[in-house]
Length: 618
Image 1 (cartoon, one colour):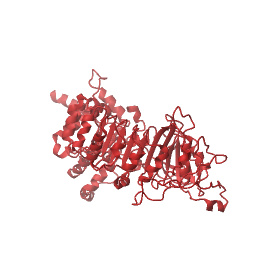
Image 2 (image 1 turned 90 degrees about the vertical axis):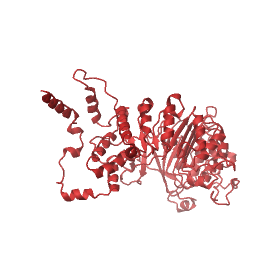
Image 3 (image 1 turned 120 degrees about the horizontal axis):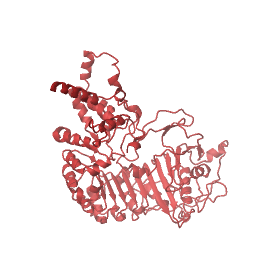
Image 4 (image 1 turned 45 degrees about the vertical axis):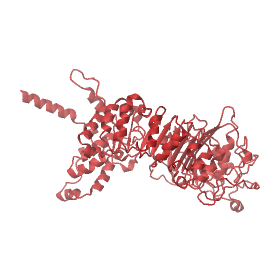
């Protein structure tokens, strides 16, 4: 009788554990294409481990995620990550050689996802509720917490082999906020950890997370990113000792109230720092960026994000960029509500020849200074420019148009040859590009974008001397004498008009506009331009704006919404731009896939559909 009950329980367990065929991978259902042989098995056994790891990386793409972004921001929108993880674990059970290679890929970057982002989740959720025959709607166990506990058991059972493989650990928000005990026990055996999602209370030195902070400081000395919020001034000052997290590459300061000399001491001690974000920190001023013989040198930053730092002015940034290492390294610069004047941006661009992405957001109270005769914006490598200038409530609507006319004149003068994407807070900016006569521009007070009847304001020519040359002086040259205004020659059939043009603009410029600060961007996200009239080519994956986890601060909020129109301007060869008709569809331009790994480079082994409805599971 006991044997009979055992057979029934075993059969019931097998039926409950098996998934329906519609949720299983296609390779488990379809018959093999060819019959295996001894020769094929022998060749498969001779595959080098590096090739196996490369193949397994395509089976589970998110295992190669090395970004410093949270679990929610680094989610892959293509396929189901838990199904990919299951497929990789099945590969590890094939043979010993496969297991050795699969374990390296499997535990390199670990994600704890709460649910399956495919149709299998509905089946599993219903299956978890059936706890017994009397209580078929019981409360199921939290899947994310169960997965974290399984990971904790695995790495603590074998810390010398598996624990050393984990370098990135990403957990959902609710797990890292409520289960910090399990998280601390897991981190304790991960000595090579470079990034981990931590609760927000640890960043502000809350007493409840003191044990977790001490555990991370003692067990994870190789962390690459750390955040400090108001209340963590004491922990932030400990970085200057050179004994805590000396390998930091990304530092995020939010409302930290410390002395400028402490800021300078901490930044000077972090020699590996590559990205810095400072928000609402009034003590971050020109004094921090100034050079002094008695203070350590600042690290050469690749990304610098400054928000709500009114004491940081143009003089401080120019002083920092006067070092040759800083000029060669800086790639991304974001300035939001700082002490930098918009009409003095050329002083910063002249000192940053390697700048690729530049974002400027400010509210002006006065119109564009016409008497200063500023130099036009010039940069040989700048590709993305975010120029959001708006007037204050006291200034009214007539303060900002002059700044956008100045920007349009700089573009038409040919001083930004590699500019491809432009974000402005002016809906009429595309008309200014197609209507302004170069090289003069009507960016006076209350000026219009039309080329007839508008006063032409002359712009001083750019300084030809390179900022890297020894003869370059920090005091810029005085403006040259005003030149005679050149009449607008727009007749394309006139060869004399083409010879009179000082620059031949052949670049393609994508202009994204919006009405106000809280409005929505009028653009569709575009990856690459395939040419007017060309066929639609294969879409390429677009690289993130920031490689250090600061993409949201560089790109801005709401940039990833493809909701409305985009203005694409093509150089017409006569120092002007022409709009491309009918450029709202994918027939002319290649639309980029969602952020993550490209669809063409991952196998469809999970049997799930694309996770377009991920927001429904949050």
